[in-house]
Image (tube, rainbow, N blue to C red; front, side, top):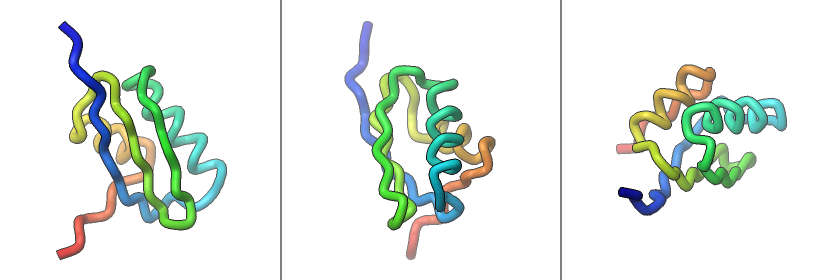
Amino acid sequence: MSSSPANYQFHLPDMSCGHCVAAITSAVSEVDPGALLSFDRPGRRLEVQASSLGREQLAAALAEAGYPEAPAAA
C-alpha cells in the first residue's frame, strides 16, 4: 500500500548558508531517502515533499540536526 507524497513547509531561522543546506539535506535523507527538498535560503524556508514520513517526524529530524522550526506566528 503506497501513500501519495505530502508537502510540508518549515521556517528554519537557523538556516543561513550552504553548510546548513547540506546538513539539512543529509538529516532529511537519513529518515526519508525519497524526500525532495526545496530551499529558500534568504527566506529561511524549506519545503519537503515527503515520500514516507509525516510532518512531526520531519520536524524532529530537523531539530535533532540543529535546525528547529520556528513557532508559527500568532
